[in-house]
Amino acid sequence: MVRTEMSGKSFSLLGGLVLGALLIQVVGAQSGADSQKSTPAPGKAVSTAPSKSSPTRYRPDKFAGRARMYYAAVWGVDSLSVKAVESGELIRFSYEVLDPSKAKAINDKETEAFLIAPDANAQLVIPTLEKVGKLRQSSSPEAGRSYWMAFSNPTRTVKRGDRVNVSIGQFHADGLVVE
Image 1 (cartoon, rainbow, N blue to C red):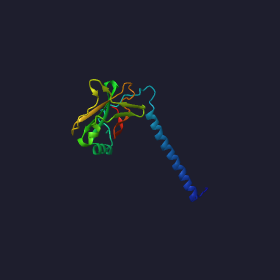
Image 2 (image 1 turned 180 degrees about the vertical axis):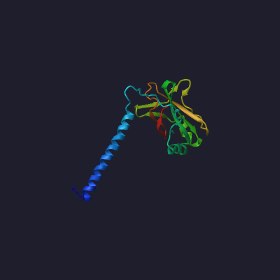
Image 3 (image 1 turned 90 degrees about the vertical axis):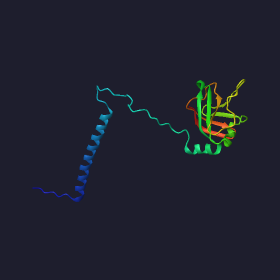
């Protein structure tokens, strides 16, 4: 009988090799199972139909909380929105008045208003019609009422989804998304 002694170093080396081989087998088996899940078996159809979950009712807030507070505190307005109307030939900017004394500067008929679309390199103005005048409400503001103004977009350079800036005298609303 031949008796061999294993020293402590060779025993730990042998244990490490066995443990490493087991680890490789386990990882290989898991990745093989994952690849079988992602690749369909031959002859089986792959379903690309959308899930049957209900559509989300989540609508992101148009403004961050601080922007909303800023417009309410400094300018006395809320619910700022920009919409393409009349097949995109007009862009309507609307807002709700919270404080009539602060919002008076926005409703001033003499103050020029511009809608600036930096990505489209366009600056739109409020058109003046013969019998109607400017397409803008210019009465004295009342709390709780909504007001609007329409900007001419005859070449349809500003489209839905564009980010625009509205400038009315000292009032500036930046980064509004056209709906």
